[in-house]
Image (tube, rainbow, N blue to C red; front, side, top):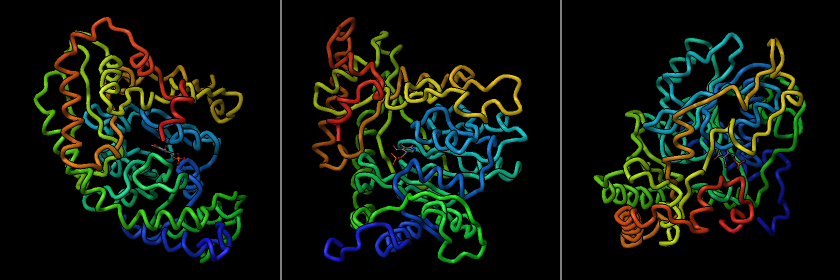
Length: 405
Ligand SMILES: Cc1ncc(COP(=O)(O)O)c(C=O)c1O
């Protein structure tokens, strides 16, 4: 690749990026794939591909990374927050229908951490109301729903290859679909508005340069070859870890929808129930666990409407005011109790890479969790910088985050 002197994303689709995207799409059971600059623009591209119009509404889970939501606003469309299911921490399908309005255009479920949103229910609702479905699969490379790959059940699937993800090129993203018209529009949008390779639908739009470089694609090809082996190791260790923790009073575990036939865990997430530990807050548990050498987070995500990274002002996003007597105040309008409890009280996030070691390494992680649980009384009223850090959201401590990866 280096010697070829053909480093960029142009001519588009470039050689390795095209080969990688095709393999990646095939692995997930979609016809077409596109390698792009990152996961945030992957979502923007998918929204453009379905032809989203200003002021149309997109239903999103409240509990996710801000990058799921920002592209909706960027395209002058309107995100509508819906709470997550406490069993999975993914979009609660039971709450979607009450959020549908005549302006709803799409549902954007996120397969969060180690679980899938209930795609059967979501597709049923989407069909009934003629909505598109865009799956945010930033955490779900190689995961399956009814034995079909992540992103291939909805109209489009969006992936991230950012450093922390299950496959990474430092930065990077992917879009998959089986719909040629969407694929063509996505290609044009990524490649400065140029016609797509097939150009059957003759869509012309203002595009950007969102192409992936050949360097990134070459790295991802190598990663793709390792994905399934790494997933097996990770899953075996996570299963063993959960087995060791089950039955521990005060800990609870996420459940899996029956359609979720293969787990791809970006983070192992479980619940610490503070009321069962005499009110000792999660931050104390996490701080102690960190001091035992186990990387862990609590406020990994916040309900997006409460996040410091979501300073949305209606004046900057005109669609929030259109055809409304008052602008939609995205920061004040929503309260999603399950998302809030997950974010600020109970969720514990352990990064996937710590589960790539041996059984002994996994025992070390489980031993540390059990040790902190058994001695939780010592943490009552205790203060320590390690605990204070765990109370902050990740957006509040960029310097620490810089050291993380
Ligand atoms: C759920 C989710 N969606 C979207 C993104 C955006 O991906 P990227 O960081 O590659 O832009 C991320 C990545 O952090 C994510 O976790």
